[in-house]
Length: 467
Ligand SMILES: Nc1ncnc2c1ncn2[C@@H]1O[C@H](COP(=O)(O)OP(=O)(O)OP(=O)(O)O)[C@@H](O)[C@H]1O
Ligand SMILES: [Mg+2]
Image (spheres, rainbow, N blue to C red):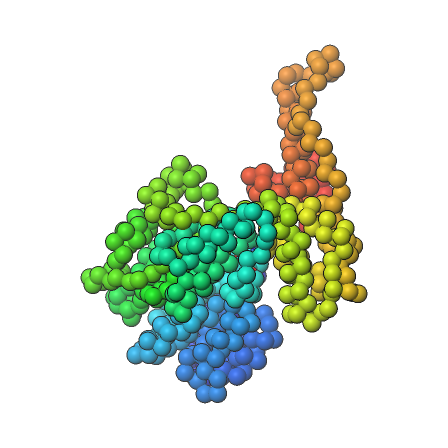
């Protein structure tokens, strides 16, 4: 589905040019002529990316930025500045803007910046990134694993050591990164985040280290990279496992020598940056397969923080569920008092492939619909109620029948084929049970494509709950 960009500028010609360019790129475009109207339009919903002029009558671009950050921090805001006001644009990035572009526009640069923002937005939507992830930094959990994480955070927050956070999607990696920053003496400095998965390979270097004017086509002005913007603060490299191998060399050098040059620049730049990296990939395996440099891994992994999957610390589920109950009561204006014991049991039994984020989303949805003052078992989504049923006994995947029971005319080949199908069906059923019938997640677990899983489900007469 096409993403919707809100274009805010007081000059109508600029709105037209920008709007036309973006529509040509396949985006839906809505416009507003000042900050006040932009904020009103934003609150109506449906906006994926905001492109706003910095200087405007009534509310200015920074007001728009602050509003979006408070409502939906995962909607990227790009600010437009005139040449010469780049300093304020840099300040805006430190305040949380996604990026800025300078007038007059360079079409290529404009397209790149918007595409990057749109991709970041799509990624955070896919993972359901919480609106509150920037603000809420309280790590909830009494499990030994979480207590240990909290202990490490408190111990290392105010040191310059690099931290590598690993864990499945939705386990709280960004929350930990933010906590490390907020508990450090850099807390008043910038917290700059870069999602390595959202940056095209050939733009990565410019993104990290900045570039000088004329360094490549589209580089109409010089621009500081994220390292420079994070000076005096924290740089959070999210999805570090996605960074191309060539860039890993450059990153390593910058880390080891604490200095770098902008792309196309000769001046050596030194910054004071605390680095935090995160990934949901298994970097050891990436190293073995030649996709991640071992030396960079050791440089990043000075302080490892491993976030366990939610299903590995089920004792935290009641606490988290209750914290989310309170949070969404507040946010949705509800007054649900408690969660019934059998509902808690079902929440604890479920597999949680999406971890804490999934629990958070389930609680939000449930609270939205619940009537009365208690969340009961029947208020929970089907796939979670299903998890409360006793798990099917894990029998051996395949049993070899005695030869005498085999059809006399079957060849070995045919028998093997039949057995293979039985194993496949068995594995698919198990994966579907574990994921509450989610085809995409099941395909991931089985390491086959979604399409071929669907074909096999058809072949075996298994219902696809998604259609
Ligand atoms: N221990 C926790 N206590 C309270 N909230 C948590 C905890 N862990 C995660 N959350 C919440 O769950 C959501 C997901 O966390 P976060 O975005 O940090 O995950 P992530 O590991 O970065 O995921 P991804 O790999 O998909 O980016 C956030 O809203 C976060 O606030
Ligand atoms: Mg994250």
